[in-house]
Each structure stands twice: as C-alpha cells, then as structure tokens.
Amino acid sequence: MKVNVMSDILKANDLLARDIENLLREKNIVSWNIMGSPGAGKTALLEKLIPMLPEHAAAAVIEGDLATSNDAERIAKTGVQSAQINTNGACHLDAAMVRSAIDTLNLDGLSLLFIENVGNLVCPSSFQLGERGRIIVSSITEGDDKPEKYPSMFKTADLVVLNKMDLEQNTNFKMGNFTRGMSATNPDASVIPVSAVTGGGFDQLLDWILQRLP
Amino acid sequence: MKVNVMSDILKANDLLARDIENLLREKNIVSWNIMGSPGAGKTALLEKLIPMLPEHAAAAVIEGDLATSNDAERIAKTGVQSAQINTNGACHLDAAMVRSAIDTLNLDGLSLLFIENVGNLVCPSSFQLGERGRIIVSSITEGDDKPEKYPSMFKTADLVVLNKMDLEQNTNFKMGNFTRGMSATNPDASVIPVSAVTGGGFDQLLDWILQRLP
Image (cartoon, rainbow over all chains, first blue to last red; front, top):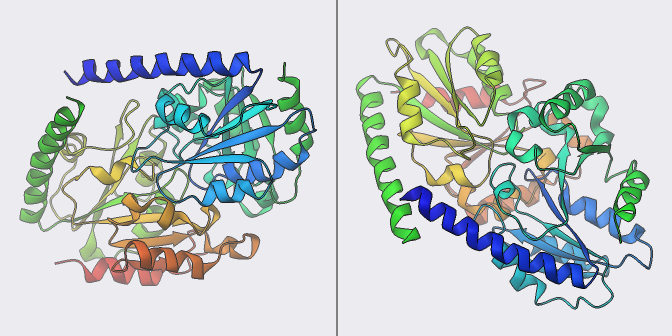
C-alpha cells in the first residue's frame, strides 16, 4: 500500500515536471535545481553569481524553505525577480510548488531560472522540478566524505560547487578524498571549488552557466 | 489516502519506540537522539565526548547513515560498542531500525546510548526512537538563521550543541541572531557552544549529560 501511494505521488509529480520543462523550453529559459545541506551556501552563491550575469542572461530565482522568506528577500536585493515557497514542513520542493511559484514570475526576457531547494542532502533528489539539470552546493566545512555518504544526492548532480574554500586552512578537508568520493559516485559531474566570501572560482562557475545557455 | 497511510506508519513507529523506551528504562540506560545537518559534527562530538565519560557512565553508539560504515568505525576507535545502520536511501532512522541495532549490543553495564541520526535537519524530527531526549548539533558555519528556518527540528531539542566555535573569527555568525532564533523557536532548550577541534565547551557538555543520568 505504502509503495503504491508513493509511486502515484511520483508519477503525478513527473507529469507536472514535464509541463514545467515544456513551458521553460518554449520560453528559452534554462533552469537549475540547486540543492545542498542547510547552510552550505546556496543563497550566498546566487547573491554572488547573479550580479556577474551579462545582460543577455537575465535570471529569476525561486526559493524553497520550510519557513521564513529570508532567502527570497536576500535575492530581491540583487535586483532580480524572486519568489518564496514555504513548504510548511515538507523536506523538499515538488513540481506543483514550483509551478505555482513560476506563475508569480514574469518570464518574458528571462534566460535563467534558479530553483533553490530546501536545505537537505537526501529527499530533494527524488523529485523532478522540470529542471534542465542539478547543481549541488557542498561546503568544505561539512567534510570531504559527503559524496560517498549521500550517494543518492550526488549521483544526480551535473555540477558540484564546493563552497567555503576560504576556510580550507582552518579545516581538515582533503580535496583528494572529496574527488575520490565523486569519482566513485558520479564521475561525470563537474566540480568547481569556490568561495562566496572572496569570490574565488566564480569566473569558472559563470562560464559553466553561460556555456549551457541556448 | 496518503494521510491515512502516513499516520499508520507513525503509529507503528510510536509503539515500537515505546518498547525501546521501556527496555532502556529497565536497564537504567539514558538514550539521546542526536540530530543535525550533514557535516555538523555529530560524530566528531561523540569522538571527543566519549573518552571524557567517567567509568560509571559507560556508553554505546548507534550510527545512522544512508551508506558506508565510516561513522561506526570512527566510534569503534574510542573503544565503546558501536552499531551501524544503513538506511538504504531513507532520510531518517525509525524505531524498527534502532530496535534491530540495539539487539546487536550488549546492554549490561551501559548507562548511555547515543543514537546518531541521518544528517538531515528536517525528517528525523518526526520519528520517535524511544529516546530520553534530543540533542541537535548545529555548526556555526551553517549560519545563525537555522532555528527559525528549520523550526520543526529545533522545536524538539532538549539541547542544542553549537559546534565549530573555533571558526568563529572566520565566519559572519552572530551569536545574538542564533539565540534570538532559539528564544522564538524553543526557549526551553539549553544551548552549549563547543569546538570538537579544541575541546572548548566539552566540560559543560559533559556536565549536562552526567546530570541527566539516573
């Protein structure tokens, strides 16, 4: 019984996700589902990246959180459109929530849609949101063992942004351990080390994003 | 339909949790459900705390992870009994998993059982494991806004251990924001700042644990 109900939910979600995918393709908008642990720096990444985007790459952001509109307010300060979803306890975004948030945005002239998921390294990976691909933000203060400890999440990433590199000297994070974990879990994903504090690595991140515009 | 199935699961879990609670009470064992984000330092905390425990406070540890036995192996090096649960994708421990793990431990002479949950600041809060209480490990590198952004988790804590205080100078963490968030979310919880690297704050943590032994 439990399994049947779960697969029905996933099927309905997949149908809605396909609608979102079609809508965004028609509008020539590339969307990225941004996932990671609480406090990995998902919002900080967007705050740093968005002002660097060239005029032909206008972005909007959908923020997902259990509670508060803190993140959408932070994004609004960058000058782009933002919408906040409060999941009221749910541990991930689903396609219906994202569809409702998209309906509050003016899509004309947009090239990019960033969907920041709930901070959670497990549940969001099971739910398609109509995205072009997935970006995991992982911070080095979380340790270098995360790809092998949270394989369901890291397996689905197109890009892993390794944040808080400015703290490298103050942690026991070993890059070799992290890349070894990524090679075992998802050898096709790109890995870009950055610091949202110093801005280091953001040129490379910007290139990665712009290369994937239509 | 979905809601009914969910409440059945929770009810079965609560019954099993009550059995665990009774078993541990009979044995005079105090158990703590340790929760927090991936990489907050839950295992590091136990690695530091366990060698400080006096002889009359013998501990065992149950480790929960999606994959790997890394954490149980780290704990085994401290010399205490440890059992690893792999949830195979599930985002939290449940009482049935904990019961199976308890059956692999020799409970004679134990005073403390630490149950380290899956790294996740959302889902574990909904599942009773027969614990005496709950300890959340939150690291300052995650930011000072976590209590208000993850209220369902922070509301259930008896103690919040604020880890990675050694990095305070390198972050923009504001203690006032964190304690304000805790006051709004769960004013009854204790908050103890520590560093699992320097050992700072662990005397206070040890006192807190020992005061709650029978």
